[in-house]
Length: 343
Image 1 (spheres, rainbow, N blue to C red):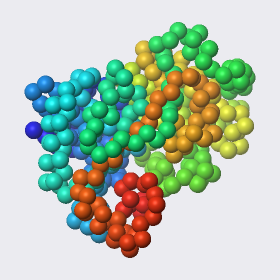
Image 2 (cartoon, rainbow, N blue to C red; image 1 turned 60 degrees about the vertical axis):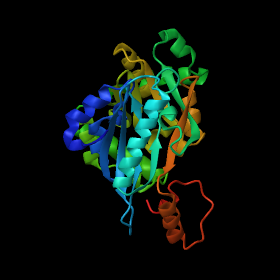
Image 3 (cartoon, rainbow, N blue to C red; image 1 turned 135 degrees about the horizontal axis):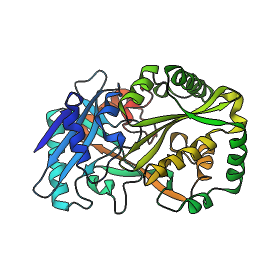
Image 4 (cartoon, one colour; image 1 turned 180 degrees about the horizontal axis):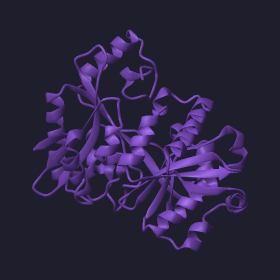
């Protein structure tokens, strides 16, 4: 009932994902091949009335014979072939997952849900209902590209409009076409990550960026000031959804806020290419912070970012936590708790 597919079967993987009611580039095999934290797999379950797909990363648990599951950086989560699968079909999907987890010594599963897959699209939380808990973390922001151009601009804050008009006079925006262009952006990105004391997980290798642009439908837009690349954003386009994946600005030019112009430029380009939504994401680390406030200037559309947290083997989970903290368990919402401070 459950088929397990790895990234060597990329055509099979992507054919399944593209047969689902809604999906994004986060679900595709090319993006999962870039993840080095564990083994990427696609779990595919067919019932008489529906089909389900769940992309995951399986990781070894240190000093243990057990494994756990997480999801790629970004917004993935489960998919279904229809918008509203029956409770019976979802139940069969859950049973297939549990059987798989038993066979593979899975202790827990953490998955990030896609904020846009709600309402009529595909309520991902429904696909996991009864399998652990769904946690609301924060809000994300998106621009509805199906609105008329004037309405999209009307949702911009007054200061944002003024800033973009000023930036158009002093900057140019271009698409990265050469290795030198990509390297310039990566250097700025690394500088940003050091400035904000980001964790090592955010320091993607240069090869990551090369492969990303080569294997994923993506665009790297760069802002040029006085002949120098000072900022950039890496965007994806998939199934009508444009994502702002990674952005960075040289610290010397932060006061210009060139990302405002780059994102406005991408919004127009995304509309011209027939996309439906431009997802800007949320705050840093899922918080309503200055980054969230910055993105809020672009749109009034808000979505809820949720995660799924499931403990499959409760006894083993508790044992791992006890061993990790010598029975002095900290008060923390981190999941899975036995990995706190380990990553």
